[in-house]
Image 1 (tube, rainbow, N blue to C red):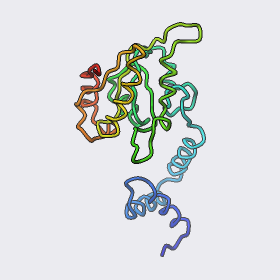
Image 2: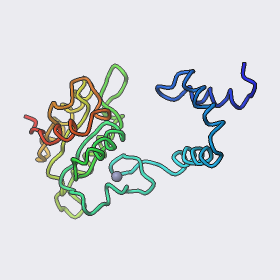
Image 3: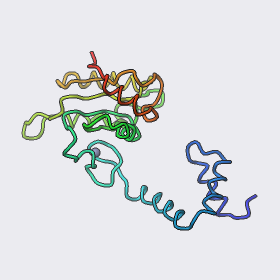
Image 4: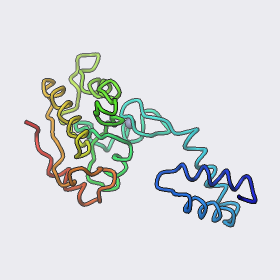
Length: 205
Ligand SMILES: [Zn+2]
């Protein structure tokens, strides 16, 4: 039994975080109890801020405080290439690798009928919207779509599905190379591997 109800509550909340067990939660809570007041309040404030101020970009689906996001509006990025990924964490990983200067599209997951993820649950309609000619009949500036879904069963299924959907639109569709080991997550791949996978991308046939 804990001598403080608040300490117990904090440990309970920390335990809900990914890869934090009860021992780690207890260690973190005790650390916060002893850490300088300003540091702890800054942490609390940044947790509050991401919940209250950060939302999703209506164009690419990434996390942002402004809509469209900084990556979608940066004039130095190449709007002719869109890299399609499953999660915002994948964008973070690719940006860390500094291997891509085009724009992104976050699907919000991968197709997995067993887990109940169908095309309607992903941001596929929004992707098609970005490839469609503008209202004035101007063709979309997008010339290439890179499918950078994870190299596992769901990611491959999503890639295949998207290729079938996009091929008739006359846009070049490429798939990242197998530099990222099969079954792994893009998000946790190292920067060199990611850069190589992107560089070695091939047109899907
Ligand atoms: Zn965006």
